[in-house]
Length: 182
Ligand SMILES: NC(=O)c1ccc[n+]([C@@H]2O[C@H](COP(=O)([O-])OP(=O)(O)OC[C@H]3O[C@@H](n4cnc5c(N)ncnc54)[C@H](OP(=O)(O)O)[C@@H]3O)[C@@H](O)[C@H]2O)c1
Image: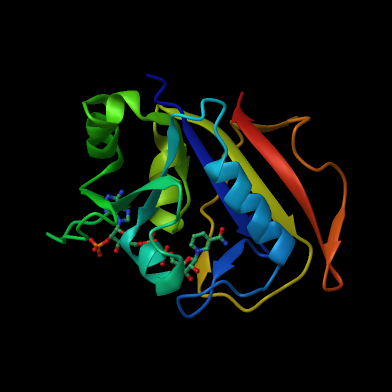
């Protein structure tokens, strides 16, 4: 199976992604974009993985987790058990190992890395990195969690299947960008 890592994140001016364990903004359409990108599959018999750090999992309101119609994988150094809600892994390579084996091997279409900071960093440094879908919100919000620096090895690319140009919601402007390695 394909072990490419697709990252998806939303950042404000200054590269903030979170504050006090939550998103600093409320953008319904942007959230719907995240949901459709991470959920939709070409093969209706398959699902996508959403790979996240333990704190990002805890930030998802209880009524919305596990993220539905997706295979939830949580990275942690602790021995935790989320039952049927989520699979626990020690690192990105460990998660890729599990995804390559039955029963996930034949179930997974795409792997989406959904944060937070150190998981994005590890995924961008991984040989399996494929693409970063980054929503750039053109406004400053106070944040305590930030997206890691994007290396000069990353270049903007196009995905004709995503909304193009400046988007606007609640008087806040944002653009959907896509990055690949040079
Ligand atoms: N704007 C966005 O797109 C976006 C996306 C996601 C999250 N967020 C926001 O970001 C904040 C949460 O993110 P965060 O950066 O604080 O935390 P996080 O990365 O979600 O979680 C950190 C924890 O995950 C585990 N972990 C991280 N990297 C690991 C690795 N490579 N291998 C094994 N375990 C690993 C560790 O868990 P243990 O401590 O259990 O070992 C670590 O303490 C919230 O405010 C959330 O709302 C925003």
